[in-house]
Image 1 (cartoon, rainbow, N blue to C red):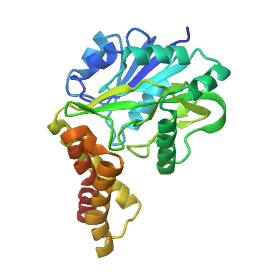
Image 2 (cartoon, rainbow, N blue to C red):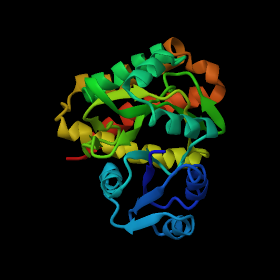
Image 3 (cartoon, rainbow, N blue to C red):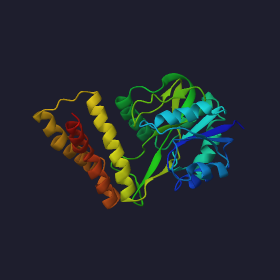
Image 4 (cartoon, rainbow, N blue to C red):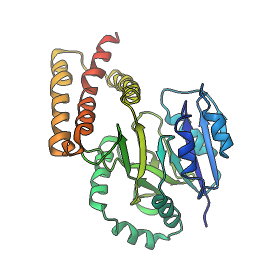
Length: 287
């Protein structure tokens, strides 16, 4: 069996770290955690569960610490996780099987994925946003993993939320984070495939937790507006305060059927839409 490193960057995740690490303990060969100087017991708990913990600072772009963890991994394959994610038994089995496959087996496996069309459509949207992240030929060196996001107690399956693909399983030395944007994907030297079974993502168990994370993302979006030198004029005010949020809410609720996720789907779409006026307002106040 080929060996697998699990890598995380953490900051004040004592509520999550135990369940996360327990979900990978049966198939990983090492756990590397780069902790951004947590003020809680994240590091201590991780050490008791067998993780190698490196303490550092907590940069605004969290991917900087994720990259540090990747660089420290010793195994041929690396599974990069966030502390609020859980690996199911089905996903763990799939990971172990996939990394043992040769190229022809992987090609057949990719063709057999039940949600292949949905996965590829999602990947095209990501590449439109982030640019190409891998190559069309060569060996498979990375895999997207779909995620089921649990929002206020419900797994969201509509509203454009699923499959929420993230490049998480990579060959050592074949992928890296650009460390420029909070939503960026890894850049991969090689071909990227997909896994069938999803990660479980428990980022927003309470509305308070959601607002805390959302507020951080709004700050980063405001920084993006500043970097891109978006105009501060009446046209953009109308665009960011009316057109963009209304368009996004209707897109996610109607076209992407977010309403089928119940009241949680409506709330998620609403606050997702409000990121546009909130970020632009902060940008306007930043002289």
